[in-house]
Image (tube, rainbow, N blue to C red):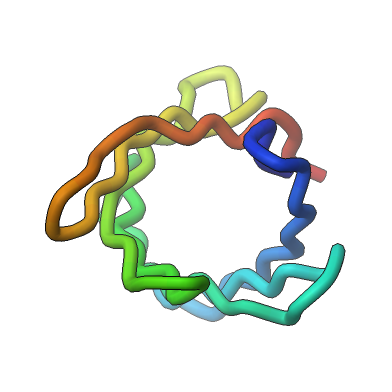
Length: 81
């Protein structure tokens, strides 16, 4: 779950491939590849966003950064079930 605008995503992992689905409104997808403690991802909502998450060692969440052609910021996944 991301804190920005409260979308809710479910994630499924198959090997190193990760797919997240926005279940709160529009079904947008996040596509990621896990390599060790890092997930590189792409998200197409209104525009394409690319970024990465670092998995916290205690398993409680992910901290990450994102960017578009002209903006950047951070996303924190606050709960993993």
